[in-house]
Each structure stands twice: as C-alpha cells, then as structure tokens.
Image 1 (cartoon, rainbow, N blue to C red):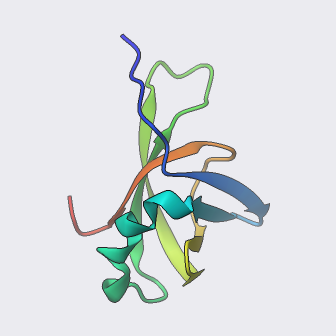
Image 2: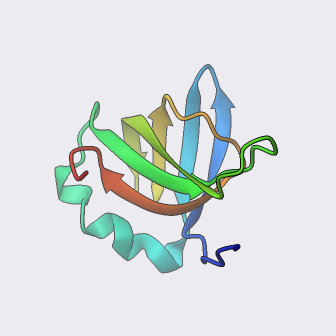
Image 3: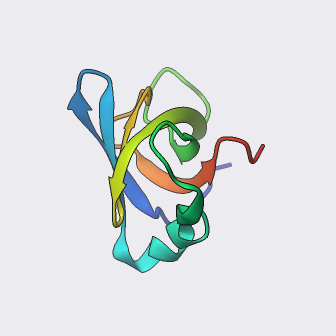
Amino acid sequence: MNLNIQPIGIIKKTGSGVSDVLIYSDFEKVLCNIMGKFENGTNLLIVHKNRKVKDEHQVKVSLAELINFKGNLLKVKGLEADDDSVIDVRLGNEI
C-alpha cells in the first residue's frame, strides 16, 4: 500500500552534515505553531519521504539539531537525507 501525502517542503544537503529544510510558503503555518519555541540547538523531528531504494519504509522520522532559521528556511545538522520531501516538522520533545 502506497501513501499519497502532499509534501510541505524539501530537504537539501549543503555539506558537512548540514542541511537546509525549506518549508513551502503554503505551509508556513506548520512552523508558526512551534516557532516561538525555536532557538539554536533545539532538537527537531522531521518526518520525510524515504528515498533509500533498499529500505522498504515509505517515510522516515529523523532527529536533527536546529542551527538557525530565517522565515521558512531551517538550517539543521544531523539529518541524513537529500532531496527528500518533508511531511511534517515537530519539536524533538513532542514524541
């Protein structure tokens, strides 16, 4: 069974273990709910499509550390994904 979920953003690897998570402007409201709690070093849970061919799972939940953010662009480290579609972003303590 395949899920059909509309992505809210995209992950782009920028090097040295750092990634940009761009949230599409139509979905900035997702960030508005948690932005007041953002500070450098905050742990984020990023739910994204899993593009690894050898892995049977369609989605992956990754823990990443927020380095900084500006508007709908989050710079994080520790995220092992590139060109994956973002499904959701949560604070790391929300599990």
